[in-house]
Image (cartoon, rainbow, N blue to C red; front, side, top):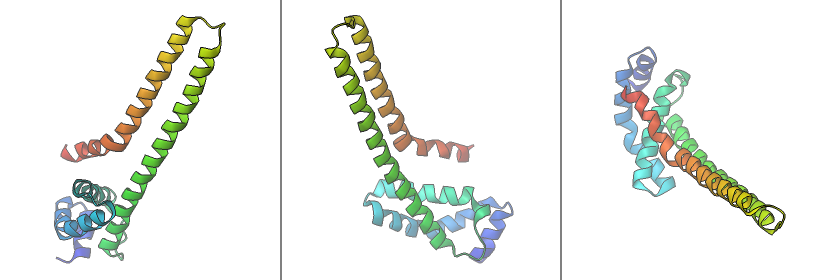
Length: 153
């Protein structure tokens, strides 16, 4: 069966046929991801994520389009967005942390504010920074694994 025919059948509900597409292009997808990341484990994850996204959105795939260039775009988008999220997260954490440090320094210099209130504010700031770091770590590292639970069901 030809590739375009397989994709058409997958679109019509024969989802199990998508495995043959994955088998055909997995090594190429991995090679593309490895070229950009230079990390074998990350490249494997990106390849799987790319096939997952293509499979999930197979109805949007245009039948006159070639499959591998489409997959290539998906892989590059995953990498670009991951890099964007990393820089955004780092910048946000630094900016918020700096602002909170400035707030704490200002409170500590103020002699009219009671010590217990200063300790309370300082505790809030530390808790907030830990929470922000935890949320972004989850977003960057752990969120990709939740998507596969849907496929397992």
